[in-house]
Length: 266
Image 1: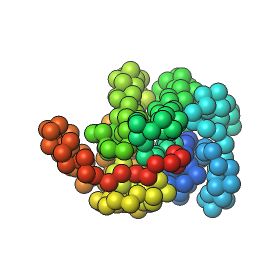
Image 2: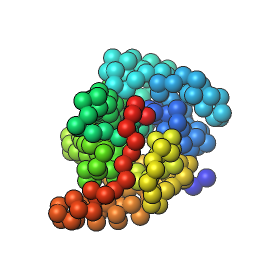
Image 3: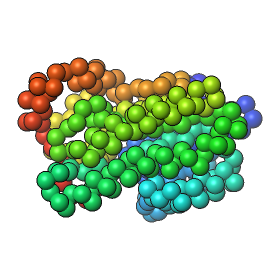
Image 4: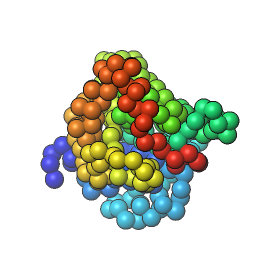
């Protein structure tokens, strides 16, 4: 196993806390860090899936059921994890939901609220209870999952694009706040990763990447303490192009882009 992937420290296994761990990127990250002998805290909303994942992993992962939109529940989960194993070395705020939304549809207001609450406030609720202890320990890494979808507003995905743009700016603010504290903040912006969230998409997904491959690449970024990275790197080039595309050109081209199905957030 490459040195960057090993989780064991000089005197103990490293501690990794992951939200949204029951499927997709979260489950893939759990498999990666479990294979590297880390002490895991796996949090999600679906106990059966979390338990099944934990049973499939080496070691003794700690399973916690909570909704990241619930600040009190997240604080209780964080305190229980730290009481059992100590201050985490890595906290990954991965939990997120996605669904097609249209502002003109009154019924979609609830979907907007759910997406923004989970994807934005969920990151804050994940980090907040751990941060004082990590500051006191003078170390650790906070990892937030943004998205290439936050670079420009995608049609039919106003809630998701807005949430991921907000996550990136929030993490940037937090990184500056923590400058000099030895607590690192890493922003990961996935492109298309093969997960249940993308499985419902009916449009082409360039550079689609297997979740376990993505997890290995993300873990390398985390180990290096990079401020921001796009996975896969090819989507980083696409994101740069989209970022400088004139509004008039972007509007004309993306008005015809495929749209995620509307419905309950995933």
